[in-house]
Every structure is written in C-alpha cells, then in structure tokens.
Image (cartoon, rainbow, N blue to C red; front, side, top):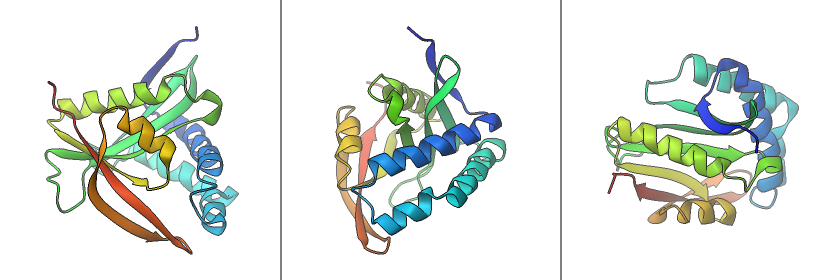
Length: 180
C-alpha cells in the first residue's frame, strides 16, 4: 500500500490543490450548480486565481486558526481541507470553527483520504479549544452530506440561498467535536 497521510499544505501545493478543486467541482457539482456558474468558477482563469488564493492561504492566512491541510499518497497531493474560525453571527469564533472545504481528487476517492482530512482537522481544532464545527453544504450534495453524516454531522436548521444565476440552496451542518 502507498504511503498515505495528512500534512499542512505548503506553498508548492497550491497548483495541485487548485487542480483538484476544479476537477472535483466539474465532476461533483455538474448537477448541483447552474452550468454558467460552474463554468465561471472552473475556467482556466478561475483555476489560476484559485492557485494564487491557495498559495496566499498557506503563506499569509487570515488568522493563525485558518489552516489548509493536504492528503498525500506517495508524496502526491490527492485531497485537501481548509478550516477557519466560524464567522456566522450565531457562533462564537473562540469555540466554533468552520470547515470551509474538503475535497478529494475523484481519481482517489473512497480510499480514506476524506476521513483522514476530517480527523486531522478535528484534532487541530480540539487543540485550539474548539467544541463545534460547522460547514455550509449544497442542500442537494448527497455525497458530502452522507459522508459528514456518517461522522456525526447533522443539519442545524439554518439555510441560505446563493444567487448563482439561479437560486442554489445551502444548509448548515454542525457537529460537536469535544472529546467524549
């Protein structure tokens, strides 16, 4: 079996992270987002912008609690997760964090990388004193909802609608990450 693990992202990982993001969105979001919006966020120009944003996230994160982690298999970046303090008004950022994204390359899916990324995220946030982890997900994203649900996440009753050329509904999931 290949060497697998999770580590903090390096600036040099930004291109791989952006590539995974774009390819995963193209495949996984094609039935969730309006085609024009999906094309806009996965175009060549968008991928270049994502690469720059992820490099910035590593070299100059908005806060010490903003982190980008990568899953690796034999030194190849195969997935990533980003988190930061919760920004929703109904959560105290001292005790709540947001899983901003968690994506695994479709070629490496269902091999434990998502679970390793989620576990590493939770471990870091517990060290920071976080007790609640939230994430906004597309309401119709059954893959992510099922994955997070299997780890104890549930809707908290909060929803929002994004204007992406057509309304796209998101729901907020949450989980208690205090150690039992």
